Image (cartoon, rainbow, N blue to C red; front, top):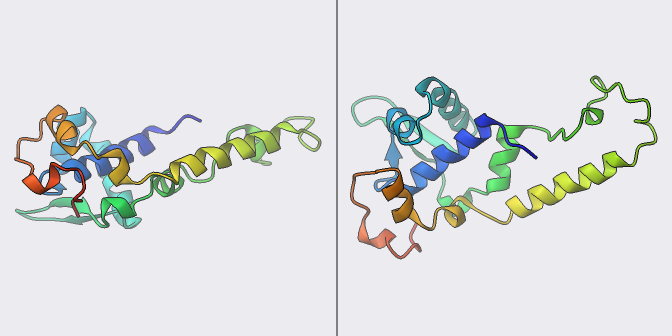
Length: 159
């Protein structure tokens, strides 16, 4: 299953915020770190805010932060929100299929099971799980603010 750029960018935003030394960032910071258009990120940030994954604020100290603790953000749930209903083949959408064997095809049930398995794996992991290496992420993304010592063990979370 190939994820959309929208989902990719959504996960990058969440990972950036989880690794950010003070738990906050701006669209400009994330855009620069990942070399992604601010225009695209604005749409992603708006969506993540509407879904309750992040909070946003304007003004001098504005930016965004995670709305939940990283260990409360399940990767599979984020993907379901960003991807919508999984459609691994055209036959999953009766309005678009032109397949003459759709009424008796066994492939549909195999693909449906594969999609369920895909999400079952993702449901086992949280944002905290995939950002346990906060210092490395911060270093690679050149986050120049110092990470507090309490985050160095990987056990504390940034809210």
